[in-house]
Length: 380
Image (tube, rainbow, N blue to C red; front, side):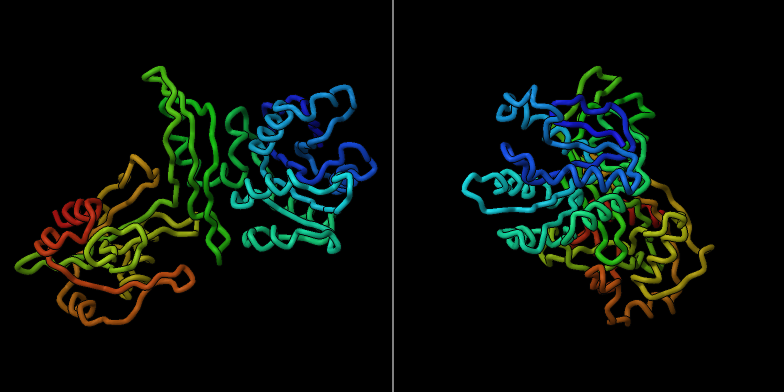
């Protein structure tokens, strides 16, 4: 393992990184818990970088209260796959283990999904931290906290320069790599990156969406762009299912979505979604989503692939693959008469089915432009 102390140069390349956050005694160094943590990590054969926000020697002690110290810690936390908080807080007159700065740091990072936390059962004033961090796992011993951190880091993945700012599990994901690959193929380079939000599926524990703010050097324009956000979620398959009569009858799903701005406050869109199975291709995803959201299981050879495109490229990096399927009279009537609820309850889905003519869809102002464009493409 590679130990990096305060003011040491942060490695330019690594595969795993762990920051040891918590109270740091300024005078009574016998209280430091990080020596025990390093011993445990060595016994567990941890083979990554460890950021230790303490001085290896006292020669730079005079810098501890400067902005340079804070800047080093912020950079090290930004480069960490996991921030391990061990909070053996004590209420002492000399404030040695009050962990006041730790409280601030915990608030900064508790929602990043990078945090693993623990504290002795007798340590006071930690209950509030536990209450405000429902997505953080807490442990009662230092060894258990370290084990959880190592397991969270996993095998790691090699990253260099600005790539270090992307936690290993996010960096390895298709959501990030699909976006990153398109930048590299254009000759662009990642100069900086700040993680803003990560959402993991509550039941499956798999990454669904990540939001980050990159600084990208654009080769074609010889400039940097750094004031935009990328919303990267799983790629999707949508199905334009229609019945051709006097007008095209289109199968729509109706579902409450918080961002919707229309007179019904429901989104009206084509059936579709994404798969948590990385081995599913677009067609398998389309077939599964149609059965799940509409209730009809159709042979895969009935789905016609139209094309793949981004839907909202100014914000979202994911790709939608559009399929179409022509329904017969019995199938469209079955859907018209289906008043049951569809969707996955664990994912908070409550999907109603509606069948509308294309003319009505154009006139009622309930479908967004993306869905109107997909419908028009699907019926051509």
